[in-house]
Length: 108
Image (cartoon, rainbow, N blue to C red; front, side):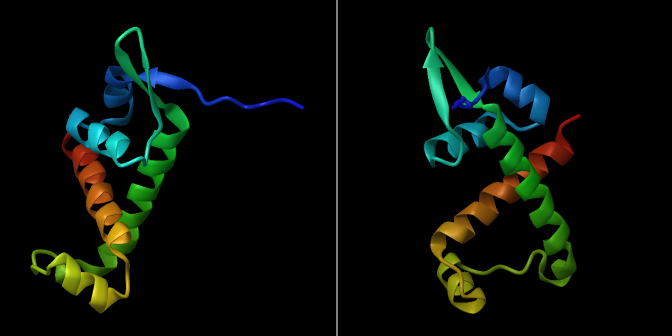
């Protein structure tokens, strides 16, 4: 029985490859959304986790594009949870995904 081990890439390479800023990537690691290890003092992240996260971020951006009329309309996290019947973790992920998408669009 073969075991598939994740491929880890250095954080700096992940930032360049996926057009994500280092602060966003660090938050994703700290929140447990992306697996990370430390090798010789350098942080490396699971490539498949970043791929999945950025794909979800792009999907979210596409589907949320239907709600452009809500752009810029302030709403608190607690109110958003009640209004959209979501948990705070889901709202947090939306915020993180939006940051990932914005990082990708603004990287040039």
